[in-house]
Amino acid sequence: MANNNGRIHVLIASDHPIFRDGLRQVLEAKAGFEPVGRDCGGGEALQIARKLKPDIILLDLAIAPCANREVVTSLASLSSVRTILLSAINDKGQILELLQLGVRGIVSKESPVEVLIRCMRSVMAGQYWVGRDSVDGIVHALRTLTPHPGSQLNANNFGITSRELEIVAAVTVGGSNKGIAKKLSLSEQTVKHHLTNIFDKLGVSGRLELAVFAAHHRLLSQD
Image (cartoon, rainbow, N blue to C red):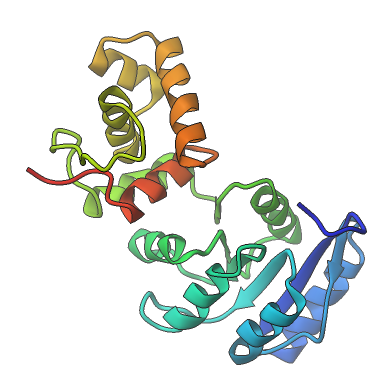
C-alpha cells in the first residue's frame, strides 16, 4: 500500500547521475508517484532505504547472480520495501535466482517509461514483474530448480493437501488449468478452486509467485 499521502514513494539508486536525474524528472511528472530522499548510488541503497522506508526502490546495478547478493538480500529483508531491478538481464536462470533473493520486478533500462510505471503499480499490488516475459516462460525455467512433478512430495507442506501439492508441481512446470485438469482428471473449475486455496494458504497472489515460492521453500523433493 502507498504511503499516507496516497502516492507511491520511490527511491532511485543508480551509479549514473544523469540517469538518476532523468528518472526522477519522469516520476515527478507522473501522478501517484513521489521520488523520495537524495537519489543515491548502488552502494548507498541499503542504508538510505532503511532510513526512509520507501514503497519501492529502483535499483540500477549491473548484477550477475552472485554479485551484490548481500545488497539485494538485505533490501528484501525490509518488508515494506519492494525492490525493482533496472537491468539488461535476460537469462531466466539469473532472473529466477534474483526473484528468490527477493527482487519483486526486473525491467530493462531500454523499456518505455510506461512499462516501468506498469511494473511499479503491479509490484505495489503484490505481483511480480519480469520484463515482457510471460509467466509461462518463467515457470518453464523452474524445471532446472525443481524436480519433476512425479517426484515425492514434501511432508512439510505448509498445510496444503496432497492434491494441492500435485497442482503446485504441475504449475511449476508450466501447466495450464486445462492441462492440469486433464492430467489429474478434474474439471477446470475444480483446479481453479484448488489454486485459490493454495494462494490463500501460501500467501501468494499468482502462478509466478507460487512457482518461485515452491522453488524457494523446496515444496517438492526428489525420490
